[in-house]
Length: 116
Length: 117
Image (cartoon, rainbow over all chains, first blue to last red):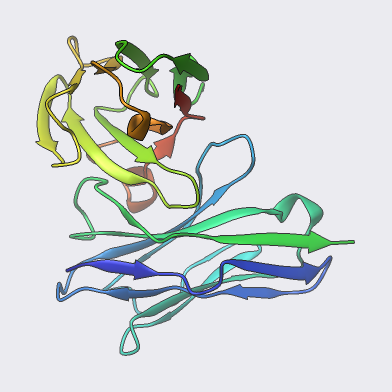
């Protein structure tokens, strides 16, 4: 069965430092897409970054990068130069196939706290 | 460009009552999704529409739940005879069917938080 595992219930980081949020996934499909979403206290899920299973390079979007290790089935999110506004819940999610509709499987999330 | 809009933002209802939520997707998006998120968990997929056609329903969507998207624009999610276990955040999302890779990600609304007392 397809599954997303986020093993860090909570993380904290000092402002301006980098932080890595872990995500491992389980699927037997060859085609899949991996997403990271941010959920602030307002409740909206905000898209951050996407990695397709056939993409050879790690995805980057501004301060966000995805460390994709296909053999290990991991898709860790790296946030560089953390800001106070980054404090939120972060969810890793998977879509199968990569070009399919957004029936996303989410992990349980990691709560990130950025300290000044 | 307005985002996905959900109404109401909060709903408190007594057990056994019916409730209806509305979702207005991003106007050019032809795909619409409903998810449910319970406390401390990630969202779980409930159902998916392409235009007005409901193409997939999760087994989480019991007979008490019904979703519609009558004209392929806004959608409603109705829960009949609510139970305390229905208390959750109900999230709506929309996306394009075609386009560049970045255009196919789901855009979520702020959700409707349901409390059944």
